Length: 393
Image 1: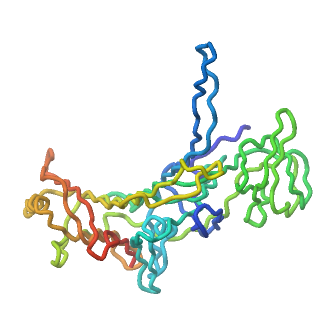
Image 2: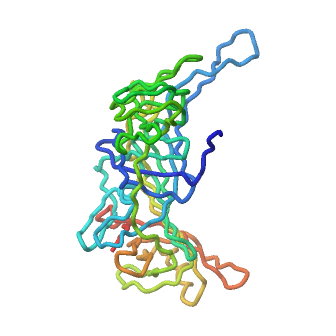
Image 3: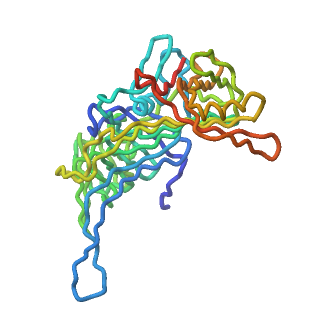
């Protein structure tokens, strides 16, 4: 029976790289669980052949190199249940915000970096059943944090990456002895160097085998070359596909409706604010330099191309006292906004925006009770790099 890819057999692993774009393969403890269909795509440049040949027919395009890759996926935000211990999504959150400060038995805080900070990368493996992509030089360009009653707390990670390699799904041809490095397969065209594979249950003690070469012969025998050599023999017709380590996850999902929102004018103490929902977005404005000549089929560098931007949208029931928001917008009077998710220490987190300037005019609307939607932007103090923090405590 032909194998059919199943959506539930999806896994993501993320590990901080030693340097941007250097393959740094995740372990099982680097797993995060997606809650949507992840997307990791790297397109190729194709240029039209514009030569005039006395015909109106088109000929195939000229093939260029790879563009910057893009990725997008959602996960729950899961506090660890232990003060000072990072959540499951630690690698992703550190990459998105730039700075992590962990205080043992107290808190983990994610904050923003200075302009001099290097652009850090991650290796992210995404297994979608029959195909596994190994994505190197991954950078979170945008993180979206919705806080909404009736939902589990989650985050959307949107980003870019330098290089993608793939491991597909095929079958071994013939019985192969231990120590062999050249493995004959039915079809090697879905496999690329730097990807990791396994052969049935033979997975090199959960480390996988790294592909070093792929040999395709039309109408002939295909080979995948691996390192190290096989730890044990494998049988004819065993499945060869992408290897990911056994996932080990912890953390505790938390419903967004628990906790509270607080606000205050600058210099005042925060007070409870009854909101329906809020969405905070951090955009890092990082650019991959995919147009420079670098001797490679892939881009190799990235830069912080412009100012980052932190925006917020809040929806709430329109009630007594809310008419002040029109004045705050017109006067550009900053407010301190805290969005707390969860009630119990070690099982909660807080999004803290010390200086929010509202940008939308007052326009209450609704068929029953009036609702008020506000949009604004978080700004830094004169100390800089303090527009937003994400706190687990």
